[in-house]
Image: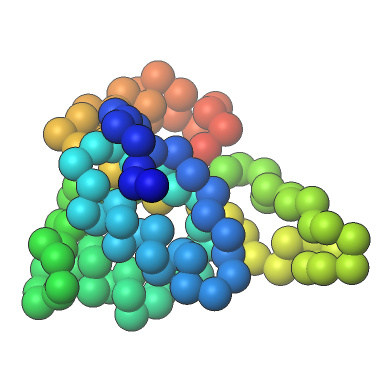
Length: 122
């Protein structure tokens, strides 16, 4: 079963294993807008650099100007099944956002409309 037709992908993939990397690779190849909640440290990983920086990669890299990070002002907490995970999240999660040709306009609109009052820092 493949991915159903969609216009926007919004997801919070499992943070274990290679799910984070696979999700970002999928998004890089997607022809739709996407918002992915991931640990902030993903932006420092080699796979992230390969996808979001110009240069040779297995797929067309996404230029840094075509996405942004939306940082929640309050830390997200995650519930874990009994006996797994941590009592609280050991990392800060951020939204990785790419809205295709609308990215810049949405970014500017949010900043102009909400400034520092909104629930996210861009």
